[in-house]
Length: 78
Length: 147
Image (cartoon, chains in turn brown, blue):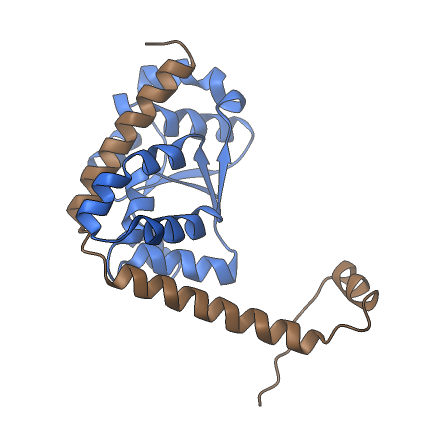
């Protein structure tokens, strides 16, 4: 086990003290674990992607074109 | 400093071992960067899902999962807030990029320092001519000392 020291605002500290039954050690530990697993999953999904930088440029320009059209319609500047 | 990611930048987060996804992961923990984007950008990306799916070979649910996580870090500003900057943006901006320019002009008028975040170098070059700051992902990573 390692010890983690975190800085909290006074406001947050007060709110935590209003919930003395909560095991904050468990809460923080679960939060960190969840974050790590979540991003590992997202990296794993992206790791299977075949999208290239060129594709991203092409798709980005396509989206920008659609966005510009949507804005022109929204502000009646067709 | 507020960063306005363009469509290219957000879509780049879907590239295998891409640095953009790493940047969003880093920022999810550090909360150092503020991302702001024009309303409808997310829906326009989703409208192009068939092509993104075809090129990435990822499923729609995987794309949604990735993009939703990234978009949690982006504050989408309603058009009504910066509508008055659209005419000027239309005058000075490259034709398809005026929503980003209008948003940048609005945020600057509110006293914020703003940069458009894109890997589209021709776009960044055009923006520099109209005094809108822009930065590529690589330069941002260098600035943050992440590469």
